[in-house]
Structure formats: structure tokens, C-alpha cells
Length: 200
Image 1 (tube, rainbow, N blue to C red):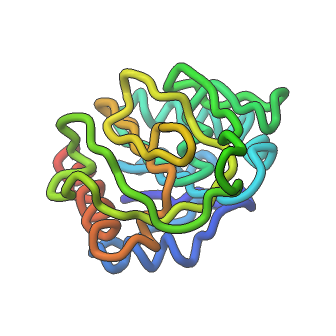
Image 2: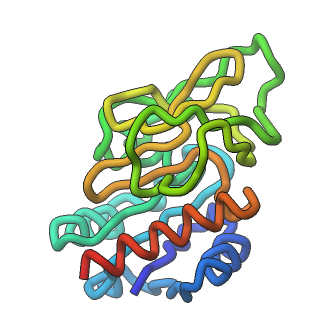
């Protein structure tokens, strides 16, 4: 089972449709305890980092415990930013901290927010990006972006390079919206579903 977290900031309908196109039906847990049997957890999100404050307390603990049980975690857009330690957009709100580093406002050299299609610059092997060619265009809409760290498997440049895909053994993230990025985005979602199946 793959859980889609509803914390009031996600574009759940489009994410659910994207995963349906990838061959998966997601369930939306009503309470943190409902994550107990999840093999994958998806944290979507659009808007201000302060919205992730709703993931504090019991939800944070339940997601952390799911990771400890071997579940996989996938953050999309704001959900990717939440994987980090925090964001300059809402300095008092902590991220999950499974990836060290912060999210910072994009340089104002080009238009901010960064909205539209831009290329992925793939940096190395990635299960999430399997079958996705270097230079693939994906759809972004954001004003803040994550630091490039050792977990970064793809970058994108908008005035300056930033982490657009991150990956560890159990944690995955995309700054763009795979569910709105055409065939390559659906391939990524399908890859995540497949990785969850193999982790059973």
C-alpha cells in the first residue's frame, strides 16, 4: 500500500491521477496510525513552507517510524523541501531532516517564482530516474529550492543550479511535479511504485 498524505497543502487530485496512470491506487490515511502497513508514503504539496507545520507531532513520528520499518518516502515539490532540515521561507518551521541542508529563495536574476518547463541534469545512477534521459523537461512551480547535497541525483538551473531530484536508500524527492510532467513524470511514478513493490 502507498499512502498519500493530506495535510492541507497538497494537490492530491492530480497526484492521485498521476499514480493511477502509473498503475497504482493510493490511500489517504485519516490518522497517523493508518501508516502502519504502508510500504510507501507520498508527501505532496504546493505553496508556503509554513504549511508543513501541519506535519509536526504525530504525523512526523508516524512517518519516521514507517521509515524505520523499511517503508519508502517520496516528497513532491513542497514535499521535497520538507525532507530537508528547513527553509528560509519559514525559518521557525522544521523540516523532517532526513536530508541535511536547507531550502533557499531562488536568485532574483530570473523571474521568481520559477514556473514552467526546465531540464533535468542527471548526475548519476538513480532508481527513481531509471529510463529518464538526461535533459528531460519537467514542470516546475516554486520560489524556493533545496541545497545540492550528496543525495542530489539531478539538478536544474534557474539563475543558479538547485537540487531537483534527491534519492537515498529509502527517501526520494522531486522539486517539480511528476504528475504534470508527461510521460517521463509517469515513468518516475511507475518507478517509485516498482521500488515499493520490491521492498515488500
